Amino acid sequence: MARKSVRKDLSQSWLMTFTDMLMLLVVMFVLFLSFSEINSDSFKQNAGAISDAFNQAPASSILPGTASIIDLSDTNIDFDSVGENAATKSKIPEDNSKTLVNCVEGKNCEENPNKSDVGKNTKSKYFTDVNSDKAVVFKKLKNEVKNTGLEITKNETNITINVPEKMTFDQGSAYLKPKMRDLLIKISSVIKEFADIKQVVVTGHTDNVPISNIDFQSNWQLSAARAVNVVHGLLEESNIDRELLLAVASADTQPIVPNTSRENMAQNRRVEIVLRF
Image (cartoon, rainbow, N blue to C red; front, side, top):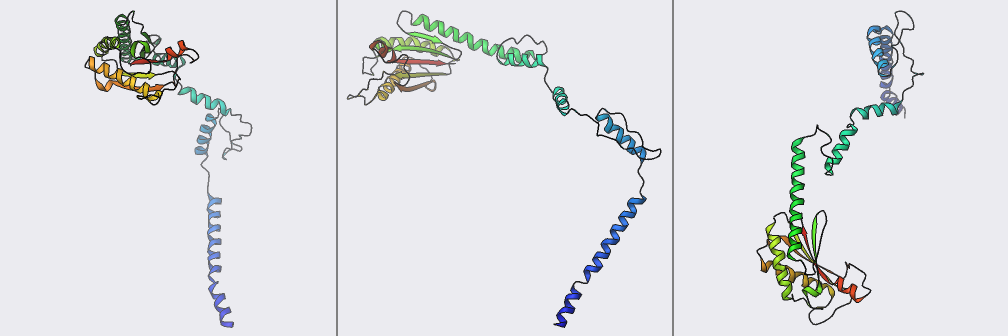
């Protein structure tokens, strides 16, 4: 037991030496700090820069020949205004920003004389060309199908040809009537003439009366068959690019009017040909 106690004391004896060394190091750093001198000129220069940043007068010395101390206790700093000032420096002028928005929306692009004429001319030329071609297509289609009962409408991007069932198919059938084939010849000739037409979507629509016969099990099949046959009619009558055409079946999901009467149901049984620019 005595040997173990001696070994334990010897194993911890190094701590005393280590503690003495730490004490000596601390004393040495304290002496260095007490003998050091502050460069008052450098401190004043730095203090003046800090004071200017906070809009305060440069700090003055407490005693001649000693370092200066800045009292920031009475300093009122409006951090909100600082943030606003910084944001204002990088903010786009209001007039320019409004003009930029107007130009993107296609209106009042000539209000700011400092913008790029190249971008203005390119943008205006593109929209002018597309709109003029769409107007020409709309006018030609109107003339081609005049007095036929087809309804043609347009919006910013599309021209829609609404073909009622009585002109295209017998009720419950998907076989094109001869009169409709003649109309498809006129429509396809206009489509082929204009390269700005990006897609032709043919959509079949029905009323909400369920159908079930030897040819069709549902209104989905009927509307799909009608759309496909109209697409075939467009392809047969002219050399339209096949990639432009798309057949869609909508059944009774997109009625024009409520299916509350025979007249309304007749309006909902239709085929729509949409020209997308």
